[in-house]
Length: 269
Image 1 (cartoon, one colour):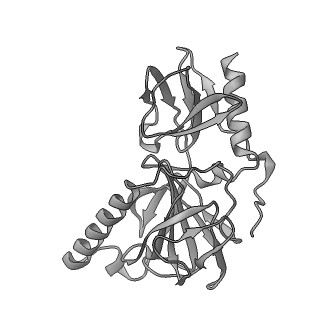
Image 2 (cartoon, helix red, strand yellow):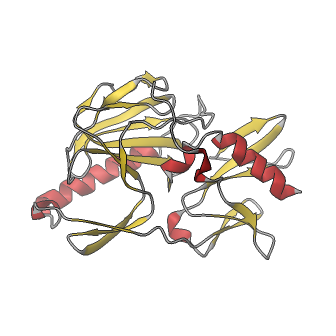
């Protein structure tokens, strides 16, 4: 099993009260909202600790400066500058797609979208994730992306570079719900961690699991590769909560859940 070596001082998830008394946090983060006794919640990951229920709410990247609603609460998404990332892809056919490749990429995106919407409620994560591969972080979450100097969608994942063949492990227990070899993502798989929490793995050289297989934390998923649209071997790791892409670096922080709930208690006083 690969141990989490993320520095302790990466900081806690930012949850605060703005001047209007609303909850707030940074884009791509998760906040824990304490539920009232008997308060009904649907389609959210609920964590219970010491008899108190908390709803895990993902803060969308594309709602910066705006508020989202959760039951009767407003949650403000802070504005944040994540910097930018510029890459050059020599094979321009992977950048300016033919009509055939464009259709293929669209069909694959719909397949992935459908998979992300069909998660299980029979098991639940305790939000104790580990990093899935040892390597060098080559691109962080939230960066403005430029490909061959043209602006593209922001990078809502974590890229970890390593040599081809480096082992990739499951960061948390889950069920394999999709495997494919896609135009953009190359050899690709999705893990369902339950209750709307999922993770995906792109550009693998080898996949060592099969669809519907349950994987324990630390078990091998596959190996680093350079399949699909890439500039070199790396893992493109995405984490989703209720179809919102969250920052993978946040969820692998030491004592993530403990600190998340503690901050909620502190802000409630």
